[in-house]
Amino acid sequence: MKTSKLIAMIVIMLFATSIKSSAQDSTSTKEKYPVLYGVKAGINFADLHTKDADKTKMLVGFNVGGFAKLPIFKMIAIQPEIYYTTKGSEVTYDNLTAQGTAQFTLNYIEIPLLLIVNFNENFNVYAGPYASALVSGKVKNKSNTVLFDYEHNIKREDYNDYDLGIIVGGGVDIGRIGIGGRYCYGTKTVGKQKDFAGSLETFPDSKNGVLNFYVSVALN
Image (cartoon, rainbow, N blue to C red; front, side, top):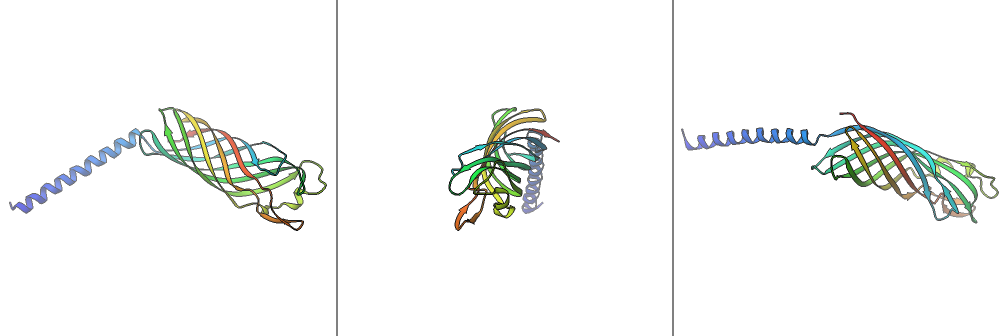
């Protein structure tokens, strides 16, 4: 047998052995750290951060959606999510631009991308950015208005169509069930710029803040 053919046969055998070994290692890794898919739902305590308001009051709402947990190493995973979430606040103003109390209700489709650190099989912490698209936004008068009628002066088109922000949180996993809490902080103002009585204002000049608690269930 020629030397070139022998070398070729050895290379082919080594290549085939390498593929088989890699496949076994890949299967072993997937068995140790499988990709998880699931659903999650929880309760929101939403507020609007604004320097123009005299005080704000949290609104209680909800979030519901799904997630995928993609392990990278034993302690590290990436978790994309998508869910429907409610935000907003009850805000009281007493200034030259506006007076009275209004309730802002904002609903979003939100997509976070989280980096998860698992300290052990049960406990984890995470952080990451989110982007969300506004589904609906409305305002309701909660007190008598003299200078400003919130319901008739603020429409859906006066809100920004999307929000960007940061999420930090932690959770506990027990089998397929997870429970946790997180804080979501928006970096964009909820309102757009608009002419109010000849003055160009961003109203509501507020950013979303949501504390939420949830329960998740892995489906695989």
